Image (tube, rainbow, N blue to C red):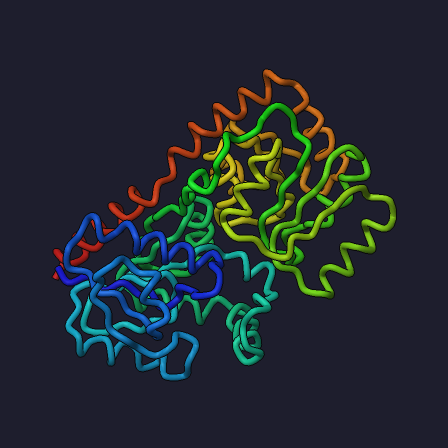
Length: 359
């Protein structure tokens, strides 16, 4: 079976969610199948692929020529093609497309790191489900990253194709640490994620009013407009908040390892990767009561009322109990072990072989 893997979404500056999903699956899938060709759009992506990988070059997935991608790809005679997104077109091969979640139908604000014309197209695409249906029904199979997302895709009737869950999974943050994770207290609250409205970062900031002895660390890049909005909340007496403006994996691990808890007040999630990353490292998790958070963290997290800063502060207060904190750390490590890039790669290979057998 000649499997082609669409690696064109791997970023060369810093990973976003789609990029990390692509990078990690690519890194592990070569351990379970020998005939894999990676599709790239730039030689700069080569260092992010396994050493010695076979590659072909195709157009950038955001270019207008993407509409011809299926025809161009067919010339290379793949048996099965996997893409972590939905832009790739069908051709003379079995095609697996990925829809990570349905969040942008409910929250249509596009990522701000895309060109203006892409953001406009993004909004238009998500005003109706018809374009998504056309894209997904052109595939032979659809992948997604959680049971919650699978249910939503089915409820919205976005595809007639079978749907499989190929989970996200954590990287190995522990490899960046020279000392053991400190868990003797919770002095720091850590947020890893974007600042789009549905992430509800404002509730995290407001909770600091009730937690004057603790510090909230906002790790991700933030636009000047988003930062100004948060600083206005802080100025009303909301305690200690540190903007990190983007961090490396090593910096991320270092902040989490320093007597911290991972927090998220998100109103909507497709998976919730930071939760798994924290739990794997042995860091307690306190998050909004959202279905994807429940799926990912199970009984290993404390849950608060999504828009209630006081409810969040109360749950953080519960972590002062040494026995409870130790219990959550233990349960978290057990829960995080359920998510593995290696297992996800195996599932993808199994799916591809099944599709290849259906000629």
